[in-house]
Image (tube, rainbow, N blue to C red; front, top):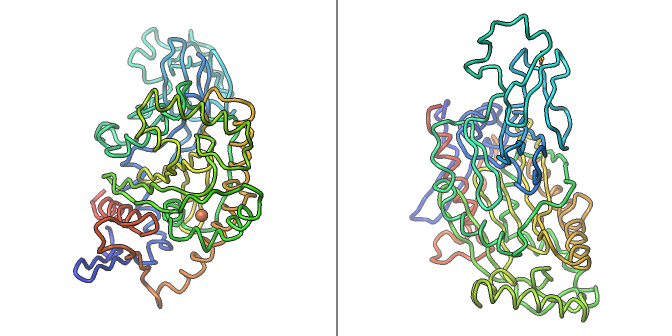
Length: 419
Ligand code: FES
Ligand code: FE
């Protein structure tokens, strides 16, 4: 790290793991994170279901870069930098749609969905071999790849291949895409909000099984007081290190899951339908995997900032720091491409009820994260965060802090390297 400061302190003998609060507040850390982490990792761009047809596109900001994800006339996916090769203007200014061409509004250059320059006003004023080298096409992001429908990009041309990078997280992406044989797709619309806290607080929170019972007491109370909102399934499970900074909690819980844990609230109609879904999962994947898909919840972190929560609905979430103490969050619902109206309604209700910015969970979490960030104003006097829970245990529980140690160890590794 540029200032050689120690941000992570590990004592294996005493089973303690500490993180310096200055990592959440220092400007130099925030700047280094863009160079040493976001420029060096595979980052989530979108899901292939968002660009199903030829000409479909979505625009995204990923690590401060404007990107267009397109499906071109040949059906191939492209991740293009959304800046005109002529003199820089943003070429596509819509968030999604379907187009044959993209025309830059400044001087009118026209590009295909594969990024190739097709024509430009006054083309007779250019040499006959203009753009022979492709320099005036929209530039592709240096690396682009797709795993189980999830599209990733990297700004590092020398990065390891995506499947190697994903390591043990691949199994979990497979498991989530196995929810339905019709495939999984992003539901139209997104949740976009900001939190006055450092982005790493949301990394920790997204895979924190320790806080549920206290922070979300009102949600659990609400379910308990809703007729048939909970079963007697115990909240229990484990956390796993998936390699390369990725981690997951996998656990059973008393709430309902549209795939396919029934609760009395779903009624008899729901029971029949869920049994059908479950039987089909057994046929396709065998009893053991079907059990896991249907009844286990998963909070998955793919380093550095992709979170997939497979809980009472499936959500995909990513977030970037605009400042050390301020982050911008984007969330989407992932659902089977084909499911009954009843199941879709229930799923979306859960997406809003628990995870939405006006729901039962996110506002509580936002409050907790902002309270931590406020607490870090004292970082010079009270310097260290403790994330030692379960450190000496052979099999850490879902409510231990192994997954955060996995993240922080990887963070420290990247940040200690010279850019
Ligand atoms: Fe796009 Fe000139 S900047 S055409
Ligand atoms: Fe929470």
